[in-house]
Image (cartoon, rainbow, N blue to C red; front, top):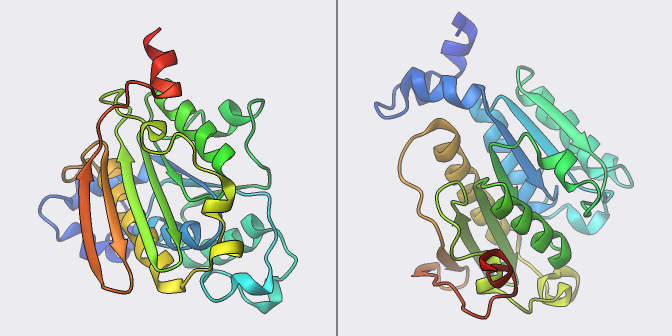
Length: 250
């Protein structure tokens, strides 16, 4: 680490269980964020600020006026621009030393391995159930840790799957029949700080995984009530009828 890096990350380096070793580990790792909306904006900002080695942003959407209350990397000047390119421009200014790779595409069965292959951690920040299922199945198959976040109305949730350590339970044990309508802010509405709260937590978990600092549990669902300001958590169990785990066992 050079003198500039020591100064930039000095407050992190003061943490006894993070210090130089954690920073060096983080700076050699790649995070992939699927979805450059509200969750992805916040998570990317903190990962880049902390000095992750490289960050891949995957999204096929463009900035819309209705995005601006919660997608903090964008401004009115970015409307109709690809989200990943607008986000890259802002993030690169914040930390020029981080490699930021924008991918303007929607993940599908043909390109998922190409875009996720080098990930040390994946952050699921999307609002499309088909994409979520694809990403979670890929992460499980390739034993890549995955940090999944979601926010709708006044509610948020966070769950981490340590697929690098265990194969059960999986995302589809939790949500076997989730639909895109249930995930959509366009239909259900959303308040910005709830998205920010979950995005911050996703970044925190990813930083712990990438730096080797602290404990991250597999399959513990954390639920946030934005109106009440309360968190509650529950440990997931494997669903014997899960369409994904059933295939994995056979």
